[in-house]
Structure formats: C-alpha cells, structure tokens
Amino acid sequence: MSKEQFHELEDYVIEYFDELKEKIDNPADLKYVYQADDKQKTLIKISKIPDRYSVLLNGDLLISFNEDYFDKFDDEARNILIQQELSLIEFSLEKGTLKIGKPDLVTSSGLIKIYGIEAVERANQISKLLNEQIEDAEKEAAAAKSAKRGGGNRNYNKK
Image (tube, rainbow, N blue to C red; front, side):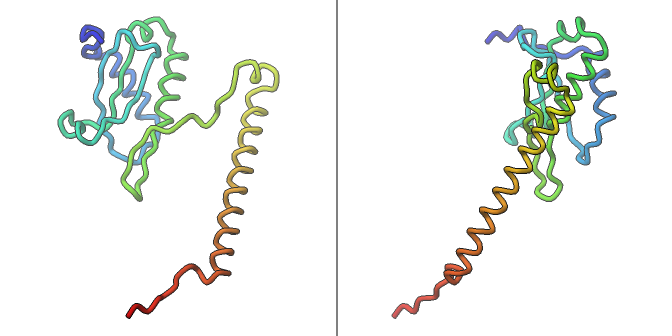
C-alpha cells in the first residue's frame, strides 16, 4: 500500500459528514478521526479504532472517504450512503462497548424490483423472528433439561 493514497480529509467533506452525524441519535459521545483514501472502493467506510490506538489518535472511530466519489455523487446519494454507514454503529451503554454492526437488510436489487422493499423487509423480519423463537425454545428446553437433572450443581464431599 502506498502512503500517497492516504491523506487529510478536506474540511468540506468533514462538515458535510458532521451535519448528517448530528441527525443520527447516538447516546454516546464518540470521537471521530478523519482520513481520505484515494483507492477506497466506497464513498465512506467507518472502522472502530482498536483500543491500543484509540488513545494515540484521540478517537473511537476512523471515518475514511474517497473524495473523488464524494465529489461525483449528488446530495441524495451521499446522504443515503453516509447514513447507511452511520446506522451500523452500535454502542452498548450497559457494557460500554462500541462495535460496527452488520446491515439488517441484505438482499438483491432484483428482489426489490419484483416484490418491493416493504415485502422484502417483512420477509426478512419474519425470518429473524422465527430464528429468535427457535433459539429461545432451545434455551428453554436446555434449561428445563438441566433443572430436571438437578441443575448440574452437585456437591461432592472429598475426604
């Protein structure tokens, strides 16, 4: 990798991102570090900075943009792509952890053209709920089996 592909991000791109970031409800006070990547194959990429480097960089997330893409996209495309990435940021207040999640709707454009986004989203939600119900049932069955055996807590007297 050549170092020339990475450089400081232009202020107008950071300002644009910051305006959209403010519209997203994020309960944590996250610190962002910005970088331009001329060879990046997407408009924006958000990465969690490992704890080891977080202190050195004074940031939690690395936001990298391909400035050529940014300049060629219209506002609507930019907004969609940036907000799509921002929506993947997951912060657990209880655990104090930060991670980049996976999209909750993965499909093909052909299916959306045939069925529409609402139908595809509904089918995916039904599938997700069914999987959660199966997992819950398996956990309940395992707990019941464990309780039936006495919970597995056996005290042995060693002499």
